[in-house]
Length: 248
Image 1 (tube, rainbow, N blue to C red):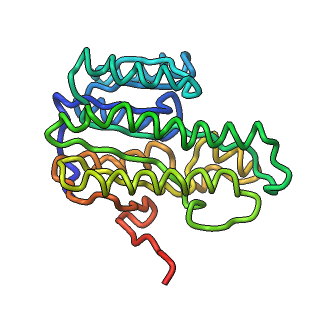
Image 2: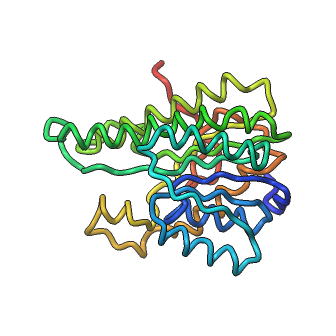
């Protein structure tokens, strides 16, 4: 895949844009000329992103939005349509960890919150922007998942189940749109030096992990007009698309 390309004239929406992989993907998109619609709860984080994008002569629109607010997600789709009339790139990155716990010890509020943010709100975003991506000549959607979506790992049940559900939603969306120019792919970034990772693994040395900036750069080619794959899983650590194993 060609990595040397620009995104001038493109409109990109990134959820969870105030930190981690979402922050650095937003910055990389802006560096290549895309106008970034940055969505996150943290106003401070969004303002820091705005400053960083300004230093690379990029442009962005900040959208402080709590993804618990489903009606606000719907309105966002309408506002993008009114202002730009299309969307070229979606990065569905926002997510929460919940707690690492036996599934029988999970509180109902925690389980519901993880599913609301990691699954329901992402579906709502997809539903809101699909018509806008269809207006692009080369719509691209990147859905950020996790390696735990493919394993039944003890104590990770809530988060793993949410990411598994999100992956299937994304793959169904890809199948439904495969006859269009829209390309939808899922990304497993692997263990990355982020706040969520330190929350999950507090005893781990973060310097042993790739930075969010490096991971973001590894994902950028999935926004290229030359991309042909859709409904696939891209493994950042392996640097390639991998097979999604199904029961034999």
